[in-house]
Length: 323
Image (cartoon, rainbow, N blue to C red):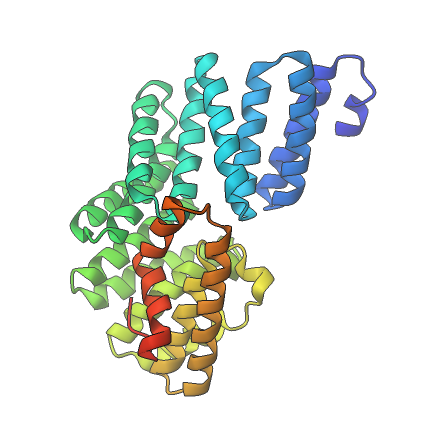
């Protein structure tokens, strides 16, 4: 379709073909290809003056740049998309943008800003009624509440997200809600129930995704297993994570956290050498990731995340505490 459209005189059709190709690439995690296609579509949309296509292209460039760890570009492109969506009063486009922006802000540790954009997105969703985004917002809010030390609120949001995900048949976010619910239960001292919830979420993940897509959830499970004294299971989960190379870990939300969690599992299982190796790699990966985060207040916020602090502090403590 893209090739045929490029020969037509109507350039808007060409831009829409590029947009379709970009969305297809995005759905199979071809982030670099999706970004390049979106940039081509943006050039045509700009030349033809199609503001909605421009906004959508900027929004996809923001999403793909975030997944490619190009955070400066992601932030700039999201701002451009937001201005264009607001200008054309495209509430659906703006709500989608804000939901996607929440994921970026979470990765950077900007938790207050995350809750703000989730609130703005939810206000728009009362009008456009897109339930998949409502689920994503609830699950993201639960994650933030976990990070800021509010497990009761995290449990509430995760429960809301879980109920909605099941109602509309949204398995990836059903699994994410179960992971967050498990983390909340672990923080509240209900470790066995936490493990049960996490394992249910992972069963869903394994049926529809590959390991790099749910490495963070395996990481969460390791810490719950360590807390429960189930060291052999923690070691087995660590060995599973250890099969992932650096390229595979790029799909993880926080690659350094996955490495850190593997270290915890190896330590629990008595493999001191592997634990030390993964602890060192976690610190090195954290530093590489931090250098990609915009300097100044944003980087300070990233370094202040509980996981970031624990990994950095391990250089002095010489051990891997449970998150």
